Image (cartoon, rainbow, N blue to C red):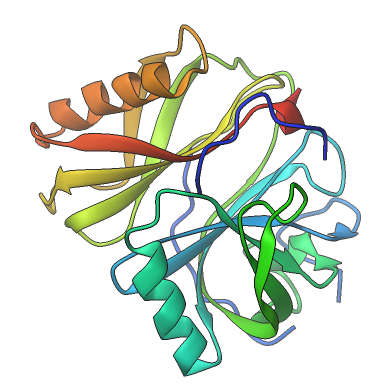
Length: 240
């Protein structure tokens, strides 16, 4: 991956679906198999862990994917949930190689688990390996969205993830080439009516404060008047 212009830490949406047992061929995605090392940003809310593929505008990485996950080792899973529920710095996952299209709806052999090393920080940019060779279970696929390099980049929306509570997550829908991969922690947004996607208007630039302001404007219109936003992960270089 190319160096990011900004790194801070770690929507047409799909309805979440369950993954089953782990062939590259899928009914849900007609493209060639997407075998590769698919690094992921790792963030959390109290009780939940989420991993999102770090995409690029070339195969095999040209799909935005967001997963709800769990670590098979209960002790590690609990430790990560506790840490990431309040983390404001990046964590990431370096998984074994697999076909990303196995996470598509209708995959003939869906991916339900994979082995990985979990890093504090970005696994390709000086991150520290904390848990090696753990088994990650895919609890649900929250978003699977092939990227379109010709799509406009400024108009944006965010997918809200996690149950209503003290900390929720918002993922920017990545549009065309030159867009931003942005994950935000939302606090003071407990209204259960605020869910799904939130429009964030047109981004004048990709500074964290600008992106957060656009997201908050949309969230507050959706009955979360006291919401606050903090960037967990922001990547632009890989999307040029």
